[in-house]
Every structure is written in structure tokens, then in C-alpha cells.
Length: 550
Image (tube, rainbow, N blue to C red; front, side, top):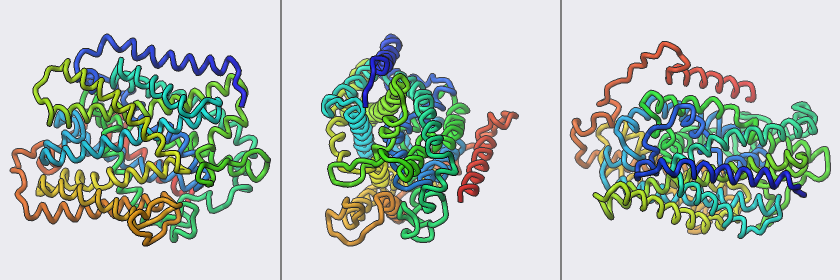
């Protein structure tokens, strides 16, 4: 791939722009609350786009294109089944608890609902997950720069990490949020022309139907058995593992995305933020999954579209999008496309780092190390934590090199942390008898169960570090199964322990449990401003898409 001066100029302009946003916001960052929570003063349209963009990092853009080539149309389940309903549920039912409790983070809500040990356990596991996810984003960008720009892998990692560090260090969460909005538009403008050009080359949708295996062109057909679909999962794993456990575990409890709604100006906007975000989410497969399916059609019609192999000798599906960019974009437009991928990385990594520094500062440092320091002190701690988070992300970036689909890796991580956490939230919000001891031991049991199942199962050469007991058809199938087993383990242990321990009195749970919280009456007459009716409309449309592509 040969880049001209105009391509490098576009990339450099983007770098200068994101740094400029940080410099512009620096003067507004005076306290720890400003740096870590944007003082809860971000407009609705910004929070909605940031909500969707926080999940649109490099691992999403590169990883979903990779899964499109690896699994075909089944990949849309990550959106239509694994996101939409959970996002609507978050906005309609869960945001009143998060926002109304005045909690600054998800772990802090756990402290209010349960106790300190539950909060600390979640804070530590979440902190580890965020820096790991940040490292995956960093690896994705370094790989991109190495393949497309010819830059050294190690140099790319440190350059990209340095730029993210500077603009978060200057502008905090607000800087990350505004850059996420910029990134959303860059992704659409940078990738949409590629989809159009490549689809035309492949012969349109008819060309895809003719040249792509029929098994990869359905959403539900073939889920009766793992052997009948390329994803290697069955309907139970798909619906319960992804559609319920992983979907609700991620969108409803992961502080990375919930934080974008929590910084809204009021409760109504906080509730509408995830619901409005479902609208672009439903259409994102056109941008991030369709390129992988188009590549399959091109491989059967033309030479030069074969994917390379990675260090493990496996097909490197992560190179799907870079290969298409290299094949179809002329100079100038190539710079825009590469900048879009760089922007997705920047946003994904920054989102994880800002969530990490908030949780570490409020839920670990302020709680256990120095409780009553000044706001300026917590501002300094937040900045130091940002530096530490970047350095840990650099270290974890090298771990991701052994996976041929970074989305498989991320789903595995989520099955360890988010799956059991959702069981805790589900019981805590809707069963007032749930106790702090039950929540803590349930979370611990769920996480350990996930590790055990991974240790006795193998998928694509990964796992089996305890004993090679069983095999899965794919890393995705393994992750889905681990997710629902860890969820059930947490659920069962939490219920049993709660029945034998003393719950909090009702007056301490007001505003934290559904049965003890006053119902919200949506006075807004226009349906599209009412979270419930807007969510129902999006849900009906999503169901229609599932029927069309059955």
C-alpha cells in the first residue's frame, strides 16, 4: 500500500484535531469531578452518540468485519439480539437507579445497594477488564499501522498510546466524549464509501447471494445444532448466552457505556441516551459487518482478496477491513479510511481508560487509601491513574497478538466479568431480599466458575489449561457457554447465601430496588421523546429485520 502526502496530511490533521480538543477543554478541568465525570453537564445528542461510539472502538470496527468474514450474517446477532433490547432495558428501567442514586460509577451503586466488599470486588475486576480491552484496541491500531503504513509495530503502539494519553490528560472524560462523537462521524464517512464500492465490485446483493456460502447468509437458520452454522453455536447459547447474559451484562452493567448516560444533564436525558443510541446501533452492521461478507464474495470471483495468516498459522480475519481499504481506496480517500480506523482505536482506548481512572480513583483510592482529600488531590490522582492505565494497556496489547479474532477474545473477557455481574444486578434491583454477602460470594463464584469452564474446554487452540475435557466449535461458542454458566453460578450462589443472611432494611433500599422506588411517569406527549415508546418502536423494527433475514 502506497500512501501519498495527502493521506499523511489527513492523518496528521486528525491527530492535531484531537489534541486541540484536549487543549481547548483543559481550562474547564479544575476538579476531580470535572476530570472524571464531566460535572454531569453533557447535552443529550452528545451523550447518545458517545454511548454508541464508546462501543465502536477498533475492536468493534476491525473485529466485527473479521467476524463478518468468519461467521457471515450470524454476526448481526451482536447487534439485533445482543444489544438492542438490553440498551432499551437500561434506559427505561435501570437508569433511574443509576442516575437517581447519585452514584458516580457502577461499583459505587453496588456499595449503596449491597456493601463495600461487593463494590471493591467489582471495581478490581472491572479495572482489569477495561485496561485489557484498551490493550486490545491498542494492538488493533498498531497492527493496522504496521500493515497499511509500514510502521514498526512497537513504534506504532507507543505513538498511539502517547497521543491518547495527552488528550485525556488535558481534557479528561469530556475530551474523550467529544472525540467519540467525532469518531462516530469519521467511521461512517470513512467506511460507508468502501462498502458501496466493494459491494458494486462484488455484483451487489445478488453477487453475494451467488458467491457466499448459504450457511453464512442467515440469522436464525441453522441454530438447531452447532454443526449447522459457521459460528458453531446452538439456539440456547445464542439466545441465553448472548441475547440475555452477555447483552444485558455488558450494556446494563459495564461502566464504560453506562458512564456516558450518567453524565447527562438530567434523569430524562439519561434515560433517553441509550434508547436513542439503539437507532444507529441497528444500522451499524451495514458499516462494520457487511465488509466481511462482501470479502467472501470477492474471494470467489477475483484474485488478490485472500486473507493472510497470523503468527499462529491461522487465517487472520482481523485483516479483512485493511485488505478492502488497500484494494479499493485511492489516495486521499485512503487517508480518510485509515483515519476512520485510527479514530475508532482512539475512541475505544480512551473510553476504557477514562472508565478505568474513574473507578480506580473513586472506588479504590478514595474508598480505601485516602478518603477525605481535596478535589484537586483527586484530580491529580485521576491524571496519574490515566498514565498508569495507558502503560498497562501497552503491556496487554501484546497478549492480543495470539488471537485470530479480537472479538472472540473480548467476548471471553466479558463472560468472566460482565456475565456474573448481571446476575448480581438483576437480583439486587428486583429482589429486595438480596444481601451484600450473597452478592459478594455470588460474584466470586461466577468469576471462578468462568475460569474453571475455560480451563477444562478448548476452542481454536485456546483454553484447556486445567484439563482438556471438551471442545467447542469456535471461540465465540466457548465464550457464550462460559457466559451463561457463570451467570447461573452467580445467580444460584447469591440466592442461597442471601436466604441465610440478613438483608438491609427497606428504608435503606429506597431508590435502589424496583419495588421500593416510586414509578416514573413520563409526561412527555410526543412518543419519540418518551423512552418507553421510542424503545418499543425500535424493538418492533429490529424484530422485523430478524424475520426478513431469518
